[in-house]
Length: 168
Image (cartoon, rainbow, N blue to C red; front, side, top):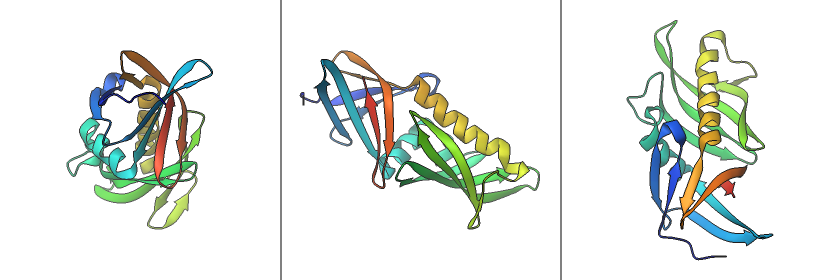
């Protein structure tokens, strides 16, 4: 394990960049088979804080999604939030269930009032697709800079506690 710099710069392409204090997230840098590898682990609260800085979906004023939170599960997560259903003019609490596939997130279903739908009701389909597409677009563009090196995403893991990025 190498010395971890005091901060890392997360570049999210079109979504902007953020300098993160490495004392606030779990960052490890090491050598794996002659290749420098970085591992960054984010808790649910870390994810919410970052989301609030990058996107309005995690704030009360977001539209068409607001107040999003993250609930990690082994191999995936549930993104809970309030989705504006334009056709009926109401905010609906929904959980978007996503699983990890490689270094992307794949839509598995939505939880609406405790009922799981494999395919979201028509009025929610475009909003759910937007959540999945935005998350995956961000992951595709993601790089992390530390100690003069730029790392790109190679693997993504989620357990009950952390979302972990493995970068090289």
